[in-house]
Length: 197
Length: 252
Image (cartoon, rainbow over all chains, first blue to last red; front, side, top):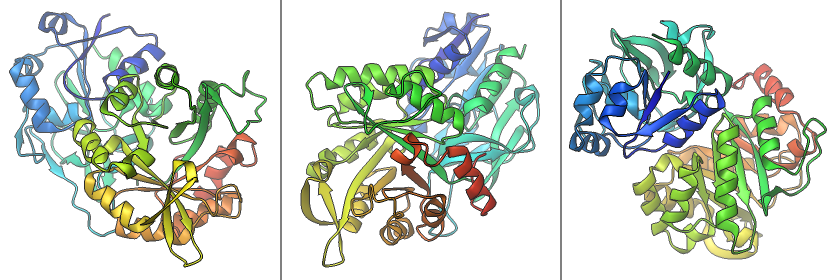
């Protein structure tokens, strides 16, 4: 099985690579279109800013490539947000794989910090991505924008309000949290993704 | 619900953990990777590695160490110590660090903060402040590992730094550090109330009750400690169970 991590101008790519290595999986980090198309599994990671990332993907025609992938694809954090229709982060039109919109957290009082940084629970878990993951498991989040609820929501988290902490449509999966930094729970979620056919 | 974080801190010199550690379960108690992995397995929410090496070889040994840590550890970690340039940050992040922490260099040249935030994102820029309460009852910023006093009030520096783009503040009270008499609740709460970024409290944690206090009265988002974990005075699972039973949102 070949696994590709899409290389673009976003952070945390190494962390995803190392997390796969800990699971005994050798992945390739690349922006080469042929290599991405030929892979059995594609991971679309990312920590960064939406408009800059989208501009970079468009410039390299990776936006069209990602949208049309047929194999299982896992977007992580910014990767998941870019798979949505639109992000309020610098009014960015994204890939539109998921119809859900990405919005800025608006604190309801002064004690609430944005971005959300830390461990929070995931609930209402659906699909094989969360196989053997107990309800209300903890995962690690770092984000100032969130994907709203929608028909593709397969996990929810509460911060200020309930939002989509994971999305799924056809062969596309997205998680807002960082499975590569979410201890054993995260490792199981990555394993589950690699077992999806 | 977002949980409060427990963060063990490891001081590193020439690639080894200093301040002493006392663990039988691990082969080499001075090896920061082994110790970090043990804490991660015990339920630590994040780790901080602070490099206090003074040699010119520092940069290379630190990035190699960060790379090894990133291969081994499955929770987020911050690296600090002598970080001054975009190159420093870029190297550490590329080797797998999640966040970097800056202190004296940012105070001497605050544009570092905005440059780092712009290039790497606020979420990975942690500002460490060494704070000391003086006879006039004001908290002042200290530099160079606490050796040099400034005339700047902690509250003013923290505000400025957040405006420039730091994503978190690691506040160490020099009055409390090493005393095991509890965290500096007043200044921690003051920063937590006025700043829109998370506050990590450091210095003085000696009992489980001190952690309860810093999350309630101190309003901290995270608490950091070193020797009480290294010397097994408090075990992380026991601390987290205690906090959970006391009603603090915590990851078990």
